[in-house]
Image 1 (cartoon, protein in one colour):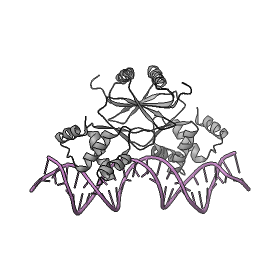
Image 2 (image 1 turned 60 degrees about the vertical axis):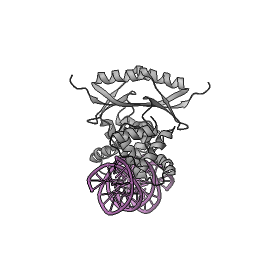
Image 3 (image 1 turned 120 degrees about the vertical axis):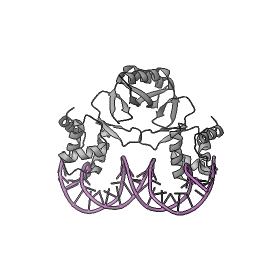
Length: 138
Length: 138
DNA sequence: CTGCTTGCAAAAAATTTGCATTACT
DNA sequence: AGTAATGCAAATTTTTTGCAAGCAG
């Protein structure tokens, strides 16, 4: 979903598209990494200097509510965000570099649902993070 | 491992066992839930009124370093802690009540290792959290 | 004794909020 | 016009830290 289509969808959902929200939306759409609130603030400021950090936070909350983005809270670091348009995936975090690699496994998805069912629960969402180091030797 | 054995092991590792650390250790050993720093402070205060919240935090850091406890950082809530003596397990969090249920699945453990290997990584640790709601009707 | 630990209060870091003003729709 | 959204500064929340005094080994 492009930034423009997103804006239309959000407007239809009753969300006002302000100059600053537009800038934040574009910033998120352009990001191919997983920026935190402050990084988004820096980047969006370049497009639209009137954005404030408060607005970034407020906008992120709205977007999360509307299901447009996902909030990722890794180990004791500030929350990071990613657009929710790509299919669900999990994350592998490189402990040495901090790199975040996305992956997806149907098998794991299925297993999780099974386990939750056994415990008497329906999964609303889940979070799987593998923290590791690059293998020595290829 | 009992609180007493833990103290001996820690002492051997060069950690001084003070009155307040002893109280925190006992509190952790007795807890069958996953308390956060503040809850631990409250409980430990009953055993040993001289503990301060700072000391709880400092002690938790030491214990984490020594591998005695695990720090669990769930969704935007303060960090929770659990003793590290039990075998590894993952967590299912009840979105309505905040309850934390422990579970373990060999299949998932194995799958994770496989996936990491494919990505060229060795897993150092991982975190799997299922967030869900109790199933309607039994 | 020596220096690791403590309590206290202040500092940090991340995020949220009150309020008067601005600007979508 | 009417109301949601904004910026700013101040408030919260969780955790860390500086410093003088205390206590374990």
